[in-house]
Image 1: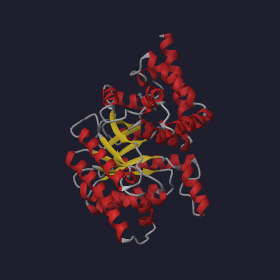
Image 2: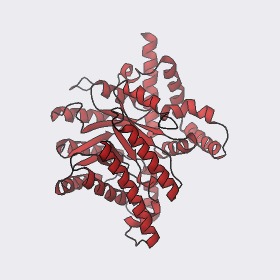
Image 3: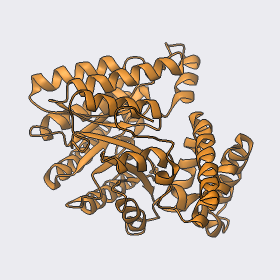
Image 4: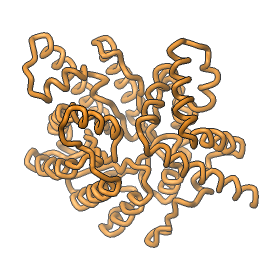
Length: 393
């Protein structure tokens, strides 16, 4: 229980208020399975194989794991999730989670789908943000080459400019439609290029307020310094800084690559160090809210309580449009629903796309991110507690 606001993330009655007994039991079975590391790894491998072999398993996946963690296969199908969340004052961030083929045709197709999602968000209070990954619009090899300051040939330069045009079109459409957009963070060896594109877009489109948000992965030991420098640059450039704060998604991959190539690991040495840096970044954003709009993208209860306390200390209204909390759809409902119930701005990342395209992405993220195991244990405990509460009511 937070002493300042009487907010409790242990209030399972609020957390699962949108779930019937049958839906809660379905969640119980799902998270019981996910609680086993062996099951996740083996099940994930079997699912990937079945999808790659085009085996007819959609009828098994769609009503279970897919429907729990995804909005649907299309934006239209995702309307169910949008409305379900809206009933409890939780916004939706439509996340087109299809990884392209890495060619011009797929980059254009991703751009068109993102424009479709922006059109859906335009004037829709239930969809406060759009989101995209730069690697869905520009070849990753080009991003890396630019970061290494290697000279691009004529064809590569033209391809990079086409990618920049796609990024610009999306950001311009967001600005013109009054839709805020997150530019997701990616791996450190392409992040500088992504950052520079984000700064360029902010300088153009964040003159009146923050429409474009860059993402800071605070498990990287240099990101707080980068955030502070970005704030100074925003002041000098006369624009507003949009910042989405996350811990990070590529820890194992980052550490493996640093070891293999013999450079300093960009990841903090301990989880405690990442937690401390993340919380420091929250403090910095709150203290500089005159120029920063930010999203607290976390499943960490302590960081959510901290932001609640900081908002109280600095007399920031619960529903101040410059401050958002965000979690993934299907996870951490104890945070999302309790925060929304207390009047805070909350949104859920809702992935969508064809099952065969989205599931490999979700499974890879689950396998790559060791924090998922601890999170599924927490979810399972809360579900069991709510089932017990309902039984004894």
